[in-house]
Image: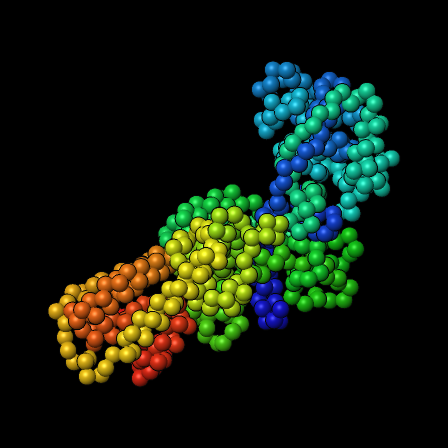
Length: 535
Ligand SMILES: [Zn+2]
């Protein structure tokens, strides 16, 4: 990465820190023990898995869990205060089997009375819901699983075992305290890179307080400073912004921008934020920034580090075009950080395109073998054919179905444009002075088509604009216009003028073919790409 970009990104962290928007806290993070890094909630995928639900006898009550090995880190049992079965047990205590630790029974509305026995063990160090309960009831946090995926010293005789080996041993050791085991299908968080089950672990990380940033991004959406075009997907963005948790920006990976934080002691108790070493004896944090922390500053840092005054001239930008699946990862982060840095939302419009699916609407995948190679299609049918096939009839934010048939259809359309051009190019110069009885009608229709396509493009209805120009060229200009010309009702001069306009209207969608024809027929006019848009 360019050093000047890194400099800007590091500065942003410093500024956030000065504004009190950065804090370091032990927080439960989504940790992949194989990749050795923590992930934000956005990077965790969810999969249905069949596991087992174990019911364990804790004396006064029984608890149900899918993860018996975490009982070694239990610091409470929770019941719902509305639950008549357990209400009078709140405030009493039980002893955790195997480790004989006495823990309190707490009442919390979060407990689902229908799940298992209606009583749940609380392990703040290893479950996000339990963490919340732990914070509320000021429970101790006992970490029994380490970042290496093995049981820690706190796990007593289970120390050093892998999580799955510890689970087996705990189940064995429980003996008759294990009262029931049954199959259980549930959704588990897995690493988006290696698909290992995510281990929630308490680790010291740097966080951004997102609420003040999110409020401003919401305000930008409400005031229409930024408009999201994408079939209602702005609602998804609002939902994210309203429910965003503080952003964990620490990553335990080496490829990335190193966090500009320095420590003087091995235990990393206190830290100093500084772009360079604050002095002798300081060691820098080895964690790097979440990649979205730097790419979230893209609109600002790219313009600031390019040519002088680019930022002043081009910020805020007009349109950001991207796929909808990256909306919370990237677009939202660009809004959060760019507004923070500049006071202005980075784009006037965000145009979200959909995913390209196969002709039957299925996602393209290796296993189905239905993926199409765009380069092969370009070689076979021409680049314009693929371009038109990808744009035609699409709607912002919605997936489109595209296959070879659609591309072939667009190749035929390209041929239609060539053939019409050839027909007109063969006209004799002396015939160009004659007029036709339908010339007026033809001109009127031509300006209607121009207005319609222009209007649709102004509204950023790109798919509809391409569909309109396709239909009007094929069914009006060729089927009717050229036919009327053959009957001498539309003059040669008028037809040629109409063709010229149609080429200009087609140009955004079929750029190579139209430019090539233009260079043959209207060479005196310069390049079509720089020719002014028809009125
Ligand atoms: Zn992983």
